[in-house]
Image (cartoon, rainbow, N blue to C red; front, side, top):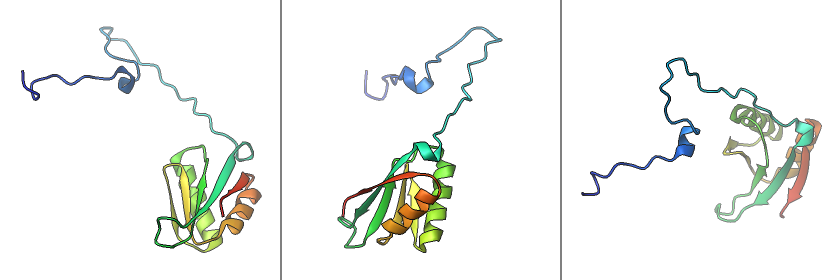
Length: 119
């Protein structure tokens, strides 16, 4: 049997634990209880770095817990407050330039806990 002919192995965790049911009335359980931390319960780490970026300075805010839409909204608010460019993805907010103090002041006014890391 060649490589092409071998059946693919399926990881049960990828299916969410549900494989197959013969019951026509079966409804898979729906978990709508998404709980997000309040801003006062979150600690955001404000990293300063310029290594590996061609000498450009950036502030990376890590530790955000919540939906991606909320992360993007917070990133937009911070970019507008600091007057810089940047992005928000993969649970991180990236701000161009050394605007860590401004960003931390804004995050504190919004109720987030902050901590300076690096530089």
